[in-house]
Length: 383
Image (tube, rainbow, N blue to C red):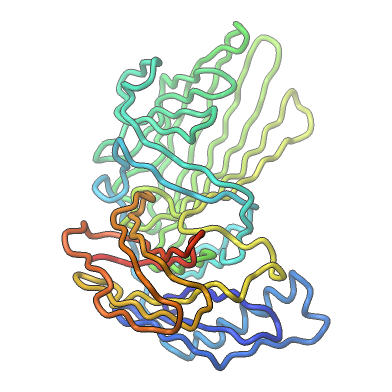
């Protein structure tokens, strides 16, 4: 499969389709008009039929090999000071198990935003022995981690139910981690709720069960490793027992120390009652769709090339009635690394629009800015 980003289209309307082969410029095509029978123009069926039309078109262009990524402490552990900007939304089907999969999450629907920050544990008044990293989503949850060359352990969870300190920490990830790596771990913790002690026991099983191409709403990313982590937990107090099952699907690349997509499915059964289920999807690199009828055909289309880049980067801007006033270059954590003015109001080529010289290798995003809003974003790999 070629790397690509899905165009925003509606049935019966002409649209641009951009296809990017590794290391090459993506070329916009203007000759595609999407039509469907009336019974396929509803939101669900029309959307899937549209995706199949696009996939059929992409399939005849090129096929790129998908490699197995390997995660280790050098490419997967966050550092204190890292901030990752994400979108949140509805929970999709997790996808298939196996090699060279296509994880089709291009239709994710955004419902909100969350920023995940990693800090030194010293910023917290809570002292957790052995922790060398703290993560927070800016809300009620704060997690204390120990990251080493052999993996990532969860030592404590400061959440709404109390300060859960693990006397037997949870081995959340192991390193090195590649396709078909498996591990398991026991967990033991104690905490209190309203002054009453609670004992927690359980076990974790983990497996890197698949890898392949990940389709997000704004980008397609090759060489993504999916890691499934399942925790079975029992919390026992003098008054009640709560059984919890947590299923987490992490989708990692070996260039970003944070999952580019995380699917979370939690089930809790209190005192033998009915299960309470919560689901969430969290992803990087742009918002998802609201629905197919709300997509705007007037958003700007542009290409940054060569991609990957190791020096000057050119911009190819398609026809637009919207004035382009500037560009920004963001790193994987969402930090703005570069800003500069631009002036464009029609289809144009801008050779050497900016340079990646001096930037660390990794994944970046080029963002074009209009008079009052962001007009478009493209993923750029810097070598």
